[in-house]
Length: 226
Length: 203
Image (cartoon, rainbow over all chains, first blue to last red; front, side, top):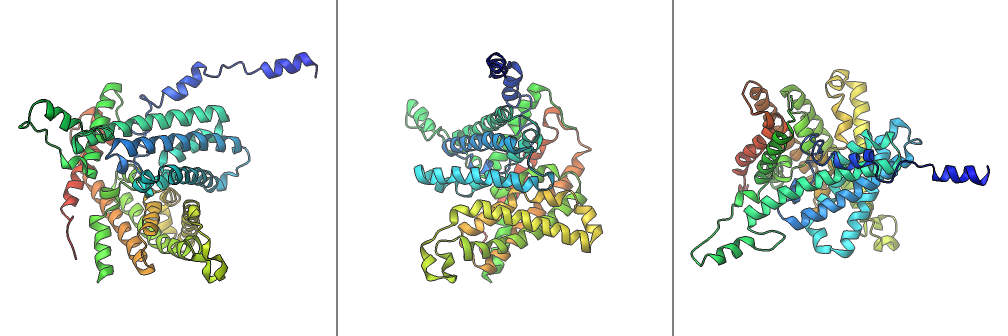
C-alpha cells in the first residue's frame, strides 16, 4: 500500500465525531423516545433512591457510566458472542462494571455507598442496560453504541432527578440538602410555616410523581399508548 | 413463630413492589391480563424461593469474609464479597435456565404458559434484590427460604391485583396522555397507600 492510499484510509472516517445522526442518538432518548416515560424501562431499581437529590445524582452518574461502557464493550464483542449464551455474557459484562462502580463508591464515598446499599447492585438488572445491549449494541459499531447508551442514560437521569427534586422539595422541604422551606418561612416571620408532606418520602409519592411526569410529558409529545 | 412473622412481613409490609420498587419492569409490562400475571407471579415465587436459599449457601461458604475456613484455616482472612454481584447473577441465570429445562421436560403445559417469562426472570430486579437483601440482612438458611417465598408471594399478589384492576380499566375513559404507564403508576401509588396500612403490624 502506497503512503498516499494509506493516508486516505486513515483519513477515511468521513463521518464527523458528532455528526447529525450521532447527535440524534443522544438527543432522541431525552424526550421523544425517553426510556422511562415512553419505553417503560428501568423504573425498577431507582425509584427507591429518589427521596433525596444527592443519592439520585450519584445513581444517575453510575447508570450513565454503566450503560455507556457496557454498550461499548458488548459492541466490541458483538461478533464473537454466540447468540444462545448472549444473556449470560451481557450479564457478566454489566455485573463487572457495576462491581467497579460499587468498589469505587465504597472506597471514596462510603456514606453514599451505605445509603444506596443494594440499589447500586440492582443497576445490573436495570432494564435500560439490558434493553440497550439487546436492541442496539448487538448490531452497531462501538462508538455509536456508546453514544446511544449515553443518550438513554441521560434520558433516564433527568427523569429520576426530576422525581427526586419534587420528592425532596415536598417531602423534606429541601433541595440537595439545603432547607429551602425553612429559608422561605424565615422570610415571612415565625408564624409562617410551609408544611412538609410525609407521603412524598414514602414509595407512594414516587409512583404518583412519576405518573404525573409521564402525563405531562406524553401530553406534550402527543404520544399515546394503546 | 419468628419465621411466620418474617413471612408475613415480606409479603405485606416489605412488599417487593410497594416498598422497594423491585421488579417494576415486568410488573408494568405483564399486568394487562390476570392469567398471564398469574403465570409470571408463580414463576417469580418459584425462582425467588429457590435462588435466595441457594445464594445463601454460596454467600455463607464462599463469598463472606472468612467463609472459606471450611477448606483450611489459612483462608480465614479472605473476603470475596466484592464478587457478590457477579456470582449472584450467575447463579440466578443458571437456576432460571435449569428451571426452564425441568419445566419443559416434566410439564410442557406449564412451560407453554410461562414460556416467554421464564428467561426474562433472570433480569427481574426482584430476584437479585431479594438475594442482595438476604446477604445484607444476615438471614439464616431457614429465614432466607421463608424470605424468598414470602417476597415472591408479595410480588404475585401485587401483580395479580394490578392486572385485575387494569382489566376493568379497559372500559373506562382515561385521558390520552395518561393511558398505559401514567394511569398504572397512579394506580400503583393508590395501591401503595392501601398496603401502607399493614405497616406497624407486629406479629
